[in-house]
Image (tube, rainbow, N blue to C red; front, side, top):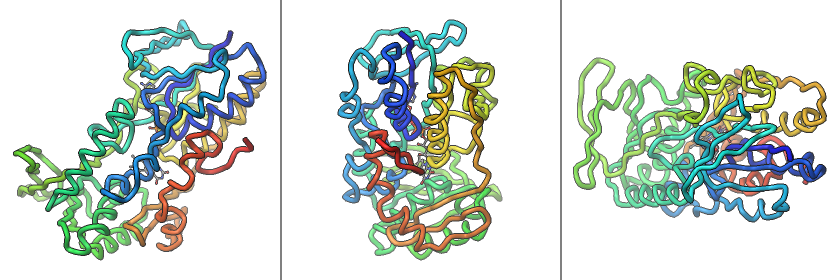
Length: 385
Ligand SMILES: Cc1cc2nc3c(=O)[nH]c(=O)nc-3n(C[C@H](O)[C@H](O)[C@H](O)COP(=O)(O)OP(=O)(O)OC[C@H]3O[C@@H](n4cnc5c(N)ncnc54)[C@H](O)[C@@H]3O)c2cc1C
């Protein structure tokens, strides 16, 4: 039996799992797919800036049970192990798994797909330990937001900017709560986003009455009862404190590579990923999505890589020459700013607010996330079955 081991079931892996089951595994009884992930539910990060706002989107719009999809496959050729990869050894083609129920298990692989993505420590933007733990943290955050007089979002990448927009739309615009966005640059969003797009984000957030605190970092965080007291240090060195009842850090993601041997990683901790989407120096370890260092961590990128690998894997399993993947070189961004406006760019063209709002902001992908979870769609294409 040749094991195809897939680590992670996120935006990148979910469609690959279904399509490879259909294109390769179910056509040849010699193959078995073993999927390892700590989440019972597919997690859809794109909707999370709105999911955290109480009463906006139900949990199941962004967290979709994977088990009914997996139950379609014969046990002899498919296994879902709830747990995490805790070590891998390319020399012996083995992965060690820490199952959620306890213990340890080592599995041998013919082919390994690492799609373990990235995490946001202490925030439910991504899977936190398990689906249950993620939901628990989400509900705690929703309660804090509900009860808060002051909400502080820290970090103005796309996630922080969108979150401030959602909270501004719901609360600050109508004067119901104070919403602050603290960030360490002159404008929200980050390069390579164009300044015109970043200025548009600033203008929209101001219209939503979000209080912008640019050129500032958080130098200390203290908890006192229900209050979080943040010490803010501005670029000129002055400090002040800001007290909030809901504190929402959005200062970036870390790659989930603690189980990967150091020689496979770059100096930022991402897996060195070739244009064949392989781990550098290994011809049976594929790397997909946020965890790889070939492109920026975006769902669009993860989807493009998935589409490539869905087509390339059947060739690889027949021993054919692997086609090369062409990384995207056009900067594309779409940033929702509350429940009626947005901004973004395609290459050097700034896109119309309403166009992005219509395409993304209305539903934040919750109208199709269940199809990605099922593996029938990626963000960029529908698969035949
Ligand atoms: C709030 C937010 C909003 C976003 N909005 C957008 C957007 O609008 N547009 C866009 O293009 N991108 C967006 N992104 C980025 C996008 O979500 C990611 O690029 C995408 O999720 C990457 O998919 P992935 O499958 O590589 O990783 P992930 O979605 O992170 O999935 C990783 C999977 O691996 C599992 N895993 C983790 N560790 C292990 C382990 N040790 N063993 C086994 N499994 C493991 C996880 O539980 C999960 O199942 C957003 C991100 C966030 C956080």
